[in-house]
Amino acid sequence: MADAATCTIPNQTTPQGDYNLERMVKAVIHKGVQVKARDTCLDAHGLKALPLIEGVEASNMLQLAQWTLAANKVLTF
Image 1 (spheres, rainbow, N blue to C red):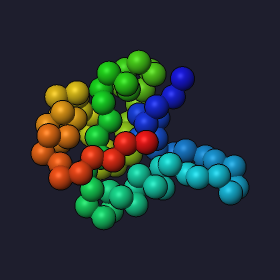
Image 2 (image 1 turned 135 degrees about the vertical axis):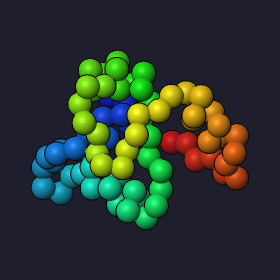
Image 3 (image 1 turned 180 degrees about the vertical axis):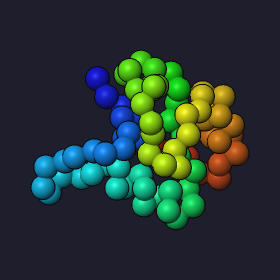
Image 4 (image 1 turned 120 degrees about the horizontal axis):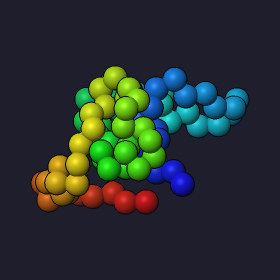
């Protein structure tokens, strides 16, 4: 089982031609986008003790709800 929390872990290696989620996350952080990983997801996958990509913060469901309510648009996929 995987979710978006796994893309916040640094030093990822991917086969040639595959998407590297670490590079993608770093690119949006570089553009000023806040990136947060839900602490319960990190904990569920055993990732809570690992360092996150620089610029990523652990957060919670309350923060996600606040961002959703404050957003002009919400994108889901």
